Length: 201
Image 1 (spheres, rainbow, N blue to C red):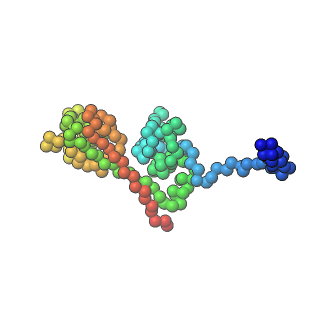
Image 2 (cartoon, rainbow, N blue to C red; image 1 turned 120 degrees about the vertical axis):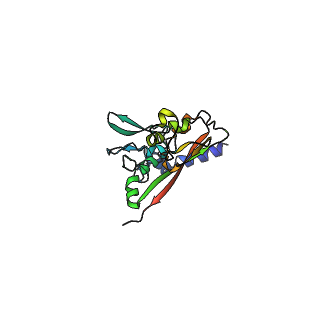
Image 3 (cartoon, helix red, strand yellow; image 1 turned 60 degrees about the vertical axis):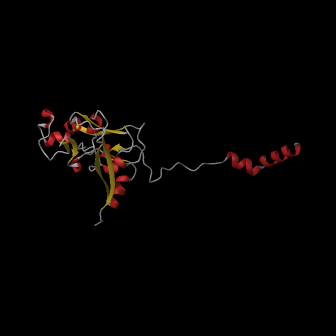
């Protein structure tokens, strides 16, 4: 036991070890070029298209709010995972983080999202709440909000032959108003995101 202690003492009191111990230096902290922080505003005008909110994979991480006549996305760091998808999806370059915008422009990449509507015929009670609440439906058929009945076949969904039917899913903007207002949770809005790359000049 005593010999072991003596060996350790001899090992750790060597001049070389003591010198390295007290003069050790850690490498400087350098932010790597691929680092993504929380998205920040670039100062460009937000058009309230909500593409950033639609593509965000984390609930409650981003919200587009209006201050006076100006719309701007607000990032909630407690929920944001810094994936940068909102930056890439925004068509107006309102947000930025890291080198995403520079890389996106250099590589001619972008995101596009489509939305698929699914209605469970067992849960659906044909109340029409989803069709009436849909903001796109109300814009296409102004009478829908007042009468509860769609008179146009150009709406996203409507009751037809006693069933709630999705007619034009391509017009869905993914706001999920229909999903939130359905009392039976019979309708689901699924988002499908596709990455695109255009040919460079």
